[in-house]
Image (cartoon, rainbow, N blue to C red; front, side, top):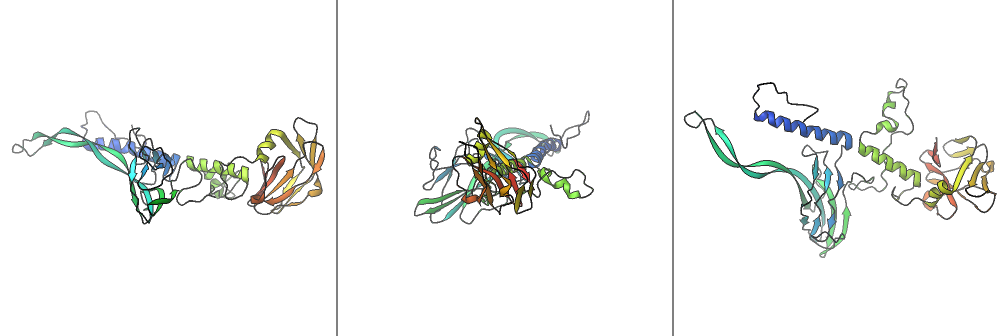
Length: 365
């Protein structure tokens, strides 16, 4: 039964059609609010709606018209619509065939609606029959409404509104020359439409917000307090994994393989020391030597204070080349993050992240 609003029924009260409609409406609204407020306020595909070249759904690379969209077990949270808030394709739902226009870019979209189904004979009452005495009669009517997912296509652009972008497919001389995945996926950081490969969760501030709101009431929306839904949380976590692995580098994904420098640092080395570490927005200083212990040996590598202060510019990283065969002094090398070359025994120790720096797993601001 519904939670946010319930139909109040008293003993010996007659229930009318309006009451039954209210019961169903209240339950639907509960689900709508739960999906919007807890999971995501923006429409997102959970899984499915993949494009295929054949009706058997075996060839994933589309080559020519028509193409086929998988509907079976496909799931979407349609939360920025006033209509149905979600759709789940049954395990027997057939693929949708989509005919494309040659010489054009074709915009394939998903539309979710309700349609009547399951006709059956039902009995009605006509109060005016028999000179006002009334009489029953039967009629065949549709007895349910199903949520239906329909695939549409046009050559002018994504429609917006309640329609959900799926693919942009360009056809030339009868062949598909490009098929762009424009789906916005729930478990993916990068949006499909509009596509932005460098998208990150839009933190308004970082760090633990002040728990006392008297100095600044805006603290109530800072740090992780700005996370409002599960989708926000997932995007924030994926963003932080990307930053931990690659800093502010562009053109990389949080799912890219972890650089050797990070994975080996935790497995083979231990960094300690450094004394008091300071950052003034352009230079990092440390008051005592850093020491890197080579696990399984008696050797250590030392980064002395002779290299302090160390200038680290925007989108740069500081790395060291460790010598695991002897005890020796080593020094930081600073390069642009997209110019960094990963190799054995090379480790990134400091990353520039906006106006801050990250030292292994410590953020120094």
